[in-house]
Image (tube, rainbow, N blue to C red; front, top):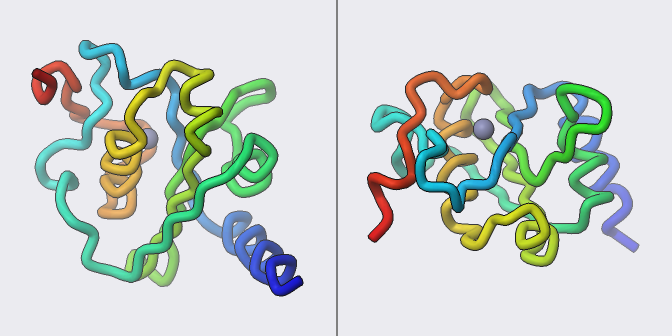
Length: 130
Ligand SMILES: [Zn+2]
């Protein structure tokens, strides 16, 4: 039963933080899904990653417009010293055509490192696939 206060706290934090969106499936190599090099590195702050269902994502990741399907978000807190990544479970990722949660996590950690939500200078995934 300790889950409820934790979720409530995260929802409060989410409402105060800047959510990031995943607008496309990164399995398409030409999509500029990866952060630019300056944001594409290990996050040095306190990182928490939680995974869950569509309803959890809907609660914690604000959609930019009605009907928009979110699959993940990164919520920066404490002036960037802490970051919460909320990532859909594998079933939901597969339904939207995402086959590798590590790639999505890399995208979101880019946001934890300060990559703006409109994805400036994103790099095509194709450059990093075999
Ligand atoms: Zn993003």
